[in-house]
Length: 205
Image: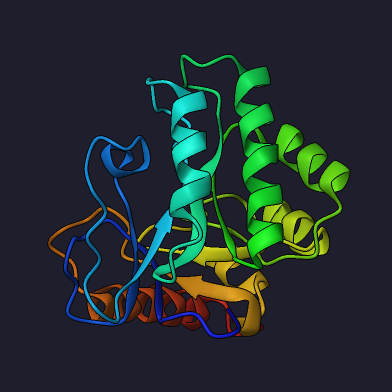
């Protein structure tokens, strides 16, 4: 997929704007049927905090991912808060990276305090696909490191402005994520407000 919608990651079930809706784990694990809306795009992946059977979820994901409505794999990734051993998270994350490559789909990545492991997975996989860190809130140094390694960054309502500005617009994405009361335009307006406030106090930028 060459062009992504303006909202690349939302959990809202029926947004009034173009977006990629992240399917809940109940769909990925196969307990609910996937009934997409016509023209709507979706993403599917194994959320790192999921506590069900990852083997079952991945088996169903491989079938679900071939549906024409699936526009991205994810959100998936690594989270040090998870009760799932990190080694198992890494194993299934690598499988999902490979699945995204095979289907030529973007990968929407969730990462919490596992940046070293994420970079190692990315390096060992040698993927040339589009990998997007969703909800990025890290410091500018981390943003630059990830960008240098080929990752792209997606921003919601909360982020260091320096990190936002360090990301080239062509590699910067927007998301409404899991805040049900926000529209995409409200998120965009908030991002612009934060950037303008920062630039007003940093005229050298």
